[in-house]
Length: 261
Image (cartoon, rainbow, N blue to C red; front, side):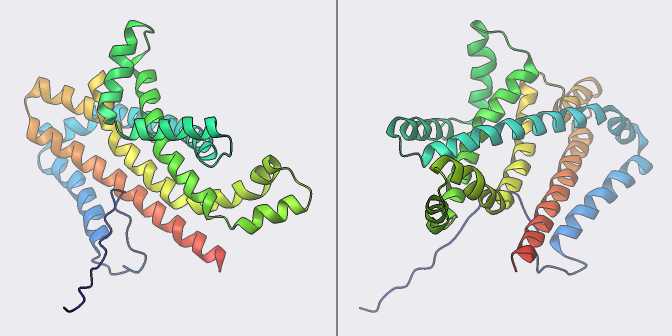
């Protein structure tokens, strides 16, 4: 029988990052980004009611979305760092606890975690909606970032640690002064992707009545009954923000590659 060769298909659930080699004026990213901006300009001019009214109604929701996203990614990075260190720890109990945390959190949908922290734990500790949203987002993405940190730490050549120990540094000093600085350079692109994914997932906090972009859109639609127009604007705003951030991530990757040469 003839040998059957199989090819590997890689599928990513990360954000759409524009290809660095895609410099065509009519690239997919440019068409999507500038097309969305054009629609956000044209629709309010052609039909001010409701499109202009919607744009005037949602800016505070955009601010709240960024507030939730930035706070969550900061705390998620802290959690992810300690989780990643725990995943490579030689102390069995620390390694096991970090692994259990990653497996449990990644096995529970973010929406369920939001409900659990706000409603279930609310019977024990009553937390503000925004605080509950940030805790849930940080707790969830901390597990994913923990795996990114673990991969980054393990990507640093083992000779770096051996050389640091040979110079008289302790293992903790070597990790802090030698390994971590190199790890941060390695993980910056995937962390950027997680930031974009977190921004999109922040729309889930609207179920807790946090006045983010989606929540403000729902409020406008519920009073005007113009659901199509409202969610069209909300979708376009999310698209512009996401594509803009994805471009920043791509530029960051390109700049880091140039520094490495």
